[in-house]
Image (cartoon, helix red, strand yellow):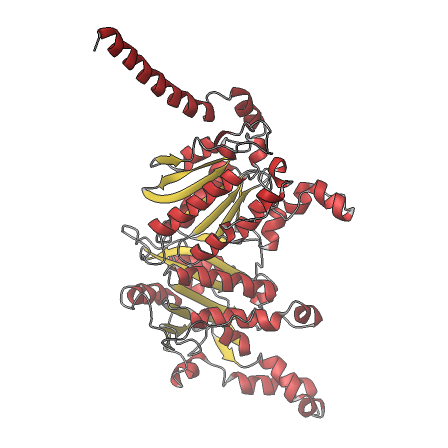
Length: 527
């Protein structure tokens, strides 16, 4: 072989290498300066900037060179780098996740057939590798250039099927970092955790132009699906001030969970310092049933310092749901909040708590239930909301949970709501405790006297005095020490002793309890 032939061969190899490098460069941010600048002008990062920030331990992309092909038969191919979605395996704080980031700079982040195939590939990797699936949404919905074609539309999408397969098996996470109407909203609704950036992210079934065309309503996208609006509705879990905060929220959420349901939550390294209020917790709960307090102060006092991560803070605030650590171990907390509706349960609170319990149970996170409530919300509005079934859903989830469950009655614990919250022996809790301020009975004493003994005190010479005497009489029988005496609970303990008891139990109890009915196919949720 001549020297010239060898030289020509090397040149060919060089050209092939450069061709591949050029193909990769074309899909990166570096060769699309105008589009990147426009994205930054919107106050947003690019998809690749987000991936780099979240995947702080590295990112291994697949599908970078995938494209849409012709939108219609015989048409020129669309210019859509990566088909509008960046996909691959990212390492978040050293742990792998399957990551998909919608790219708004590519046809508004719209969903084409190839892009959806890339999303399905992410879901497949999450299933096979047993790792979380994280989706960063910015734009999306049907790509108009492909939507008007029966050949492309007829197959639908297997992605919801894949998400159903993944549900309860690996953590599913979404971040709304831009427009999120249509398909992105459907995908996010399947997730265990959804965060959104205030003023930038939206989530909803249809954007303002489509709503106006369909219904005549003149609304803005923010009014339809803005961050604070959808947080109050319970559609999203955490509202972030900016993108960095949203990505930090994802990082925090994942830190409490194992990579899959087959793993176990990883304890943090010690030492474990008690949170604020631990030294004064014995005085946190007012003895008066009419006086409110912030149950978050109680949670902070029981938890490790700076580990409380609240979920759905502005939705159904009469119940608090939060991930935290106690003695370094991840724990899910469900607590009635006396500052809102006196902690009474309504439909929204029951659904919020029930979903949170299901997530914790799926991923092996023990549950701490703090009970202080006057019962269920009553009245026509409560009934119209379907509270009958939604209240049963909360009890159903707690009863079906296989993780350790610790129930503490801090103050009010009345009637069926006490049972739904797992009080006493209702769910065979691993710890069933009451604090000295606990008042456990079937109905609030004053209400019971007014219902059952009205004629008695109204016919007395001094009705007010007689009513007061009856209340005092029955109050003598409503005592946490009597609850312990009848062994309806394990013990009455001081609040300051509770953290130590929970830490001891966390180190002793089995991570999962066996099914009560072996071989049963499944239970059927009340809703």
